[in-house]
Length: 371
Image (cartoon, rainbow, N blue to C red; front, side):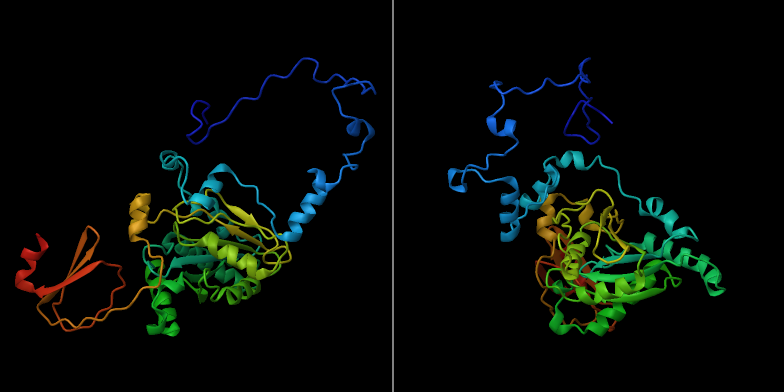
């Protein structure tokens, strides 16, 4: 905590000193007091004025705004800047914020044999699966499940946490050329490879919050697994689309006065665990968590300007190349050059966003790579 620089985290102001007579009774209001209007003395809030005079009671204004669907959400200055401008006011201060540790914050609840039913949504970006899949959280869920599975089989009380794999941003993949079954099997295998064979997934969902694909099926499955009193945690790397997906789930649930989370293409938009009430019905709770710092995610090390260059915002177009053995394939991704050597005749698939590509023989690789 500090009280010197308001631009840095932990800033606070000391409360002002109270007057010695702050408990004294207020003087009664008299009729001849000119500091208070006659409407307040009589207890009426200027009901004699018509709306055409420029005044409208607060209750009437709120009803009109609600009828027109113009209700405004009160947010902090940081969320306002992210919602309307897509950036934070003090980028330097953002680097000083501590990283969110899901294992330390929520891990004890998952490891406890008692308590409400736990469900973890493991979110991964379809365009960067290995760089966004939360491996540590998946291993934690797998370890807690194996520790309590024996007690659960014998009928003893045991909190058996479950996990759902949710692949977000499906609309970015070249959907006409990809089979949903193939993507489903590929995502399941990559999750098992990242978390280990002990990970038992309750299901795999391919969704797109922007298009609304698969959101309703996901909501129904989450309600089924969470029950009436369960806790559901949405976990994923930074900028994987957790808040966007939860907003889509809230819209799909149809609740009145649904919560609205801040969405922005900025890593680390959510700073703390946020509970969304009423989305799952009954007493089940849905939590949005801050993005995890992923060691294999390149975008977390880029600036905001560099993020605009490499971030995938529209559907990718597939390209097929037939390359002979002893040839090389050079891919230029902005200032990064990737070299792919064809040493055998096995087919391979890569999911990349690049600007230019070059095909040449292996003996010319050194010359091209040093240009």
